[in-house]
Length: 65
Image 1: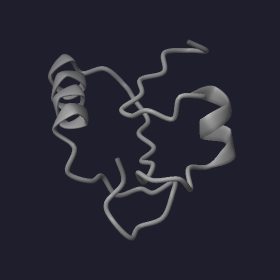
Image 2 (image 1 turned 90 degrees about the horizontal axis):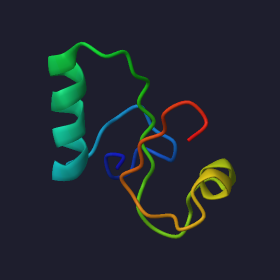
Image 3 (image 1 turned 180 degrees about the horizontal axis):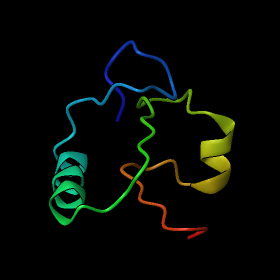
Image 4 (image 1 turned 90 degrees about the vertical axis):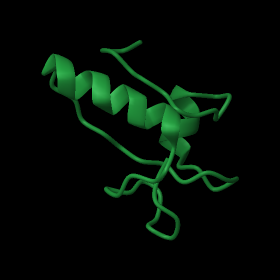
C-alpha cells in the first residue's frame, strides 16, 4: 500500500503490516525485489487491475505469476 497522498503508483510505502512482513522476509533472505506501491481505493492503475482483477492487496508477483 502506498503512503497516503503519494499517488499511485508511488515509491513511498504506507503502513500496511502485511506488506511489512513480506519486506522483512525478503531483506532477511537477501532476495532481490522491486517494490511498487498502490494506493487503496477505486483509482488503482489500469495495468494493476489487468494483472490483479480482484484489486485486493498486498500482491506478490513472481515472474509472470
